[in-house]
View (cartoon, helix red, strand yellow):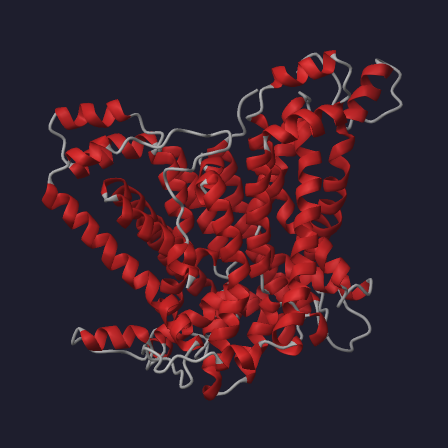
Length: 302
Length: 308
């Protein structure tokens, strides 16, 4: 499946402000052969170990007699997918996930662009303390906040509200969102904006017409990564949502996991494939266009 | 634009007559920050303040109309509770084993090796490692459960190699969840290190090579000092991420068998929601927050928001 295709395409990458040309492969060419073969062998072994669980998932999803042992399905069948592709098991949880994570991602990106603008463009006495606070917050374990959030939501009767959960997801992703967005925005030269200002543009206009178009790759990176991390987030909806019909796929896969007996590993694997597919596709899209995770790695390095 | 002159703060208290226009201007400039400030205040700062309050009460999940202030009871209870001490140790093992040693070392090794590998091999490794990282948490937990299961892939492979298998999830669950977290999290370190290695000046490495420095020597004395800041940032970030891992462990072992893989987040969850002791659970959450905050402060010191 797509697993082995998730290629960061090293040559195409490195967009964003920290953009750098890909390193020349020249030095590698000059390496003596045995050393290079050894390096490749080591990487091959590590790759095999990493890919085994993924291979199992794909094999189990198309096998009628799936167990936990690694075996090729014979003959391959789509029965597991037929069994799970219905509203109850798959479509509704996926839609819920899309509403929760899509909504929160959109909000997070818009709000962090707004916040990044003054932080990137204006000097102020409060700028540094604010940035420190944002950075400090990125480090706090969100897991630990969940119990007080739960008590708080119970008291103001927001438990089981998809809207409130969306807002909480947004807030939890904001610190890192603001931080990355500010870094990307810093990469847009200020001179261009000054020209726009002279032509009479106000701050909002120069943000939307000059700055944003130039930092599109950065915005895309933040959007995709915010969405991916939310799509996989289990604890937040697990604690804040109760009704089965509101649960996103990240939680329903878990209840699915605990409620089913051994005979249905195949269906579970099939569900996992379907649930994973959107983020893999998004990641691939990002990779093709921008060098995927490497842009993020560049924005995060010290 | 870069009016370094702007004397007042972004959200300077209005009303002060002095420099009214400048103040109004900076207020206007700070306006875009408001939505994020509101969200952060209500959904993050609020709960944290509430956490500090709740941790000193005997709040229960069910019934119990009123809660009482119990002072430090929850904390003294925690530090007298062998289960809490156990989960504190397990958290330490989990964070050091899977993040500091596992993800960090493997991530750096993969980044260094990738530079020297052939292009297809590099793409393959990166693709596979990143695929594990992109997977949703619970799916990763499920796959790792299948991998470490007694009849699972790991034992299949060991069997193939003629090595004895294990009932991993039963005999050494903490090792299994550590390795699972390495599987899931290594991509992050690998990407951060790859980006950093790109920035190491080639002349520096080549000069060292000319001087006859071996591979290890070059790595230790040339590359690592140059990417020092990245190493620290990466260590800090993965430590913090690993500290709050919940879904992966919960999906694999539920903290069991017994409490052999019950790290702090799992213990906290079980106390608060399964034993309905919200107050006690919150006290544990507060301990977790404080540990995270301490790491965060160190991280800040290392990173130092750029001087300006």
